[in-house]
Length: 106
Image 1 (cartoon, rainbow, N blue to C red):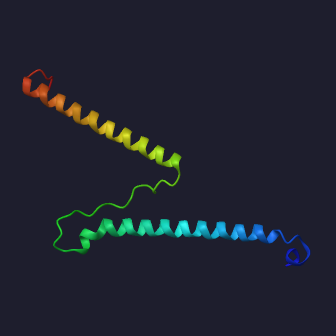
Image 2 (cartoon, rainbow, N blue to C red; image 1 turned 90 degrees about the horizontal axis):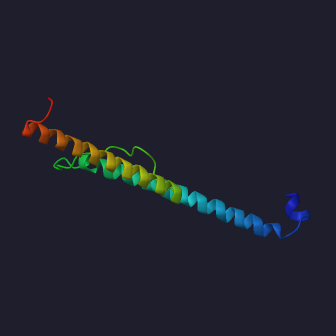
Image 3 (cartoon, one colour; image 1 turned 135 degrees about the horizontal axis):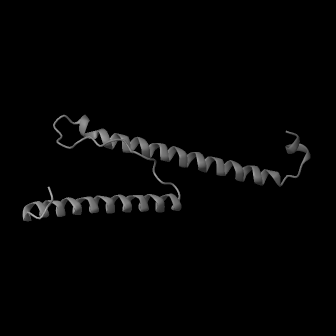
């Protein structure tokens, strides 16, 4: 309270800006929480409809990326996963082709 009465009135501008930033951060956190709730409800939506043939999706294995760097890392991780799956599929295909042609060692 001493700052209010005995310090520079310019401090009010800084306090107002700090409060605006805190409010904005809280709003973003609440929005993110809503996004996770939405994702969770969408994942279990087939369970809530008894006649639905859609499978229940698993809960997210990792959080949503929030920064540009985190988005880039997530894209890199996804690309590596797709590449590994492609290599595995190609390896299985080649193995099957070798078995069919009789050139396999199995």
